[in-house]
Length: 389
Image 1 (cartoon, rainbow, N blue to C red):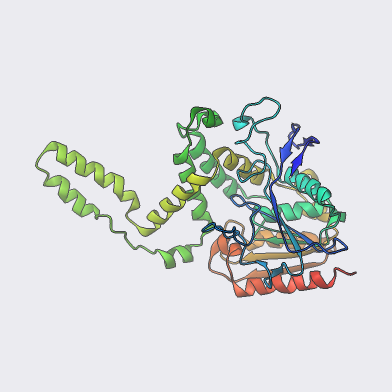
Image 2 (spheres, rainbow, N blue to C red):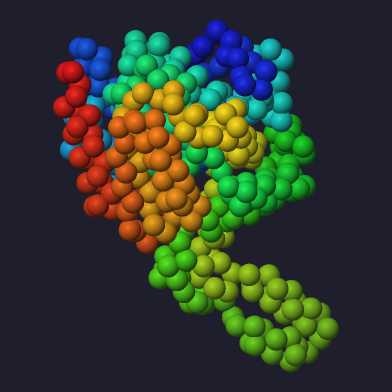
């Protein structure tokens, strides 16, 4: 959907024209009361469920959660997935042409925040004729958007479902994001964010950024269970050293030594896995988008304008809440969800909270854990029952 009315951003800049890519699932009822907005996390998109006809490996990123008969049942709800501004999956972002200049935005794309995304999503709902949402739901960064919806538009939603999220990032989380960003901006192919004009892609930086991210998404238990200290088929250091020692010429020795150092970093299976994830990510994700979205994560902090008082900040919320966390999620630890729960209870809000004992780390919110899905399913049955009231 194209928008011509300028969108004022928190940074003070504005987008004069922009597009939002979105998908819908299910049917909007006559009262327009059964809409559920799904907010995506860092590297996801508007394609939250189902598959694209004729396209291999096109399953929506939350397909286990959303669909006919699933926890968020599209036989009952009209589900909307929106790609955020600044992303690289269809909505206006750094890869697109700035209509005001005729040039690709690149590094000049304005800074965007969670609050900006929520405002843009609200405009899309206006255009779709949806005034009130049955629920807003998201995991991780998507959960931050769901929380922000409850604060920015308290009269426009009945329920907020916040999964594996937090009221702000810890210093450790910001540090991980900064290391990943530095990997990108120091890649010689980055060219100050204007790599499009140079016909390059900072793939080395993107690979490292993704590898860092994956380490934080998985728990230590899952890493050990999946990979442990298992080796790949790469020759062991001793064999490589022996090859160098027995080389007939200096050239052969140099070749063997170079081979050793080029393969050692992929000797263990976990290293090979991280390389694979990094390579795959660098082929489809935009570097400037990564910088923008991780900054939006860093900036989100609704309590900041209230002197750090989260209870005061959440006093604006009037909807009902479900929060879900996972015991081994050390990036968005359960105590962060409990901070939100306490702040809402301080304001006597209706809150349900589930802490799932799952081994998968932060990625658990994307997986098909029966206990987790049962909690969400039961909650959405209540949402459905309340549509007529």
